[in-house]
Length: 338
Image (cartoon, rainbow, N blue to C red; front, side, top):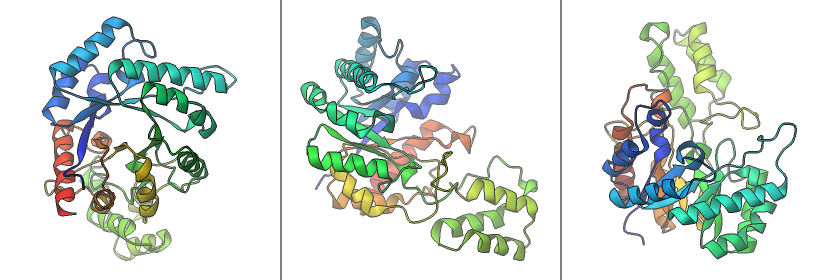
C-alpha cells in the first residue's frame, strides 16, 4: 500500500498570471515550489518558448530552473493540432511525426509522462508504442469531459491498453469526466440581488446529490418563491449540457463512473485532479473526491495526481496559490482517512 499520494503542480493552474503577463515563468516556478508538490506538469504550447521546437538555450533554462527550485518534471502535456491546415485534418503520418517530436523534446527535458488528447486516435497511439518504449516514456491520452470511461473512443483506448499490456501506454483521467454538479462558487459572479441565491443553491445541491428530474426541480423552484430569472440561471449555470452535445460542459449530472475509474487506474501514472474551489473545511463541492481517493487507495495507486485549479472563472480574485495548497491538504486528509 502506497504511504501517501504523489502530488503534481500543473503550471496550467497559474495560466491566467502567465497569459496576462503578471508573472514570468520564473515567477510561476517559485509559486509551484511554494505549493510543496512532488513534481510539475507543463502544457507545452502554453509555456514552452519556441514550441514545438524549443532551442537548446531554453531547454537548459528549463532544466536549470527545475534543479534550482527542486521541481521534478513529471508530465509534458501536448495536443494534436488537427486544425493547423486550412481545409483538412492532419494525416496519420503528421500525427505520428509530430507526436514523436514532442516525445523527444519531453525526454530531453526530463519528463516521464507525455499527455496527448483523443485526436491522436487509438490506431495511431498503438503505432507509437515502440517509440515510447525506446524513449522510456509513458504516452497517455487525456480523458476529459464530456468523455467518460464508457465513451466509444475510450473503450477503444482501453482495448488497446489491454492488448498492448505495456507500462508505456495509458490514460490521464481528468476529473471533469467524473464531476457530479456545479461548484459552490458558481453564483459568486452574480450580484446578490439579481436572483434568489439560497434557493438556487438548494436546487444545486439536490441536482448534485439526487436523480430528481430537472423539470421537477424547476417546479420546486417556483413552489418555493423562485422566478423566471432564477430558472434561467439554473438552466444555464446548474443543469449540465447533455453529454451527447458537441459543446460539452465542465460538470455533469450525478453518478460518475466509479467502476470505470477503478478499471482505468491500472493504466494510469498521472491524473488531473481538476477542481473549482476548496473551502476552509477542505471540501470541494461538485466532485466526490472522498469517493475517488478511497478507490485510489484501495487500488494502491502509485502515480501522480495534479492539482489543476480552474476556479478563477467562478471566483475572480481568489488566490490560485491558496486554492492549490488547500487542494493538496484536502487530498492528503482524504487519503489518510480512506
